[in-house]
Length: 168
Image (cartoon, rainbow, N blue to C red; front, side):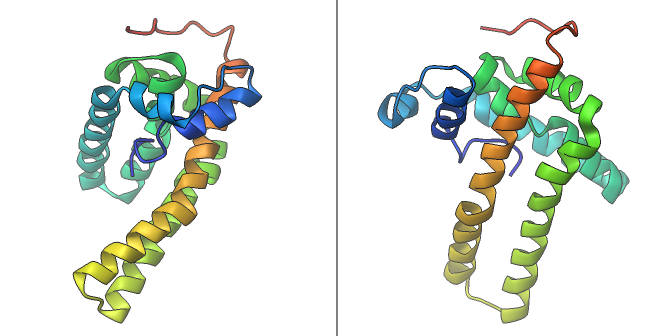
């Protein structure tokens, strides 16, 4: 679950409203999702995280942690794939510990628990898929809301720090 594709625009608007942004509603949000850029971020993150995970567990966790806000930044700042990844690294490196605790750790724990559960019980494919779907809703949607909130807070903290320009 590299970025916020499943969480979609809804959480961005719900949380964004708290930060003074327009709430556009679910139907309009779904119609205006930048699917291509969100899928691009997911693919780029999978490649980056997968490649660094070959070097070890820690490099993979660090890669996930520093790129975890990219999907949210595509939505919030209307960035392209590369720009969102660069911006995510710039924002999270100043608060790496916080980002690790509130985003990476819950995702890692959820994945390990679900994988252990499905392996231990030896479920058929459909049941395992259902467990993963329920876990995504119960654990990962709140993480997406945390990602969006963290992105907004880190953007405010770093307002004086030079930023790469968004790509339209």
